[in-house]
Image (cartoon, rainbow, N blue to C red; front, side, top):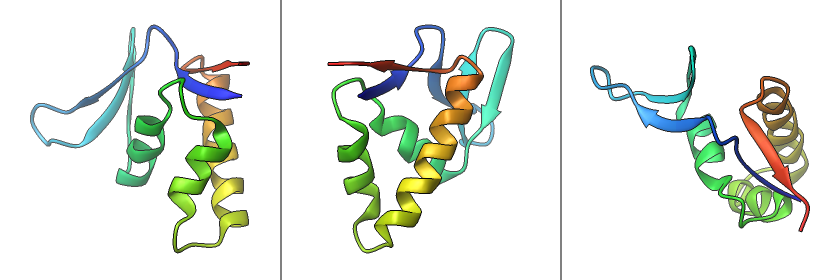
Length: 86
């Protein structure tokens, strides 16, 4: 499965603070640098496993996988992430 941002969601920078934001109509989430990196990798081309591989370099892969799953599930529940099954 390949995660990607929902059509209505965009990864942007706050014009004042420069912090990464995930924005959608009538809502926005301030993202940590790690969260922004995860979202940035969700381009609909990379598989979830490939995203985890990139993020897990030099880290505990199982923990990274758990954290990424939880984060992407939360975004999916909010309608900010969709999944391509190809």
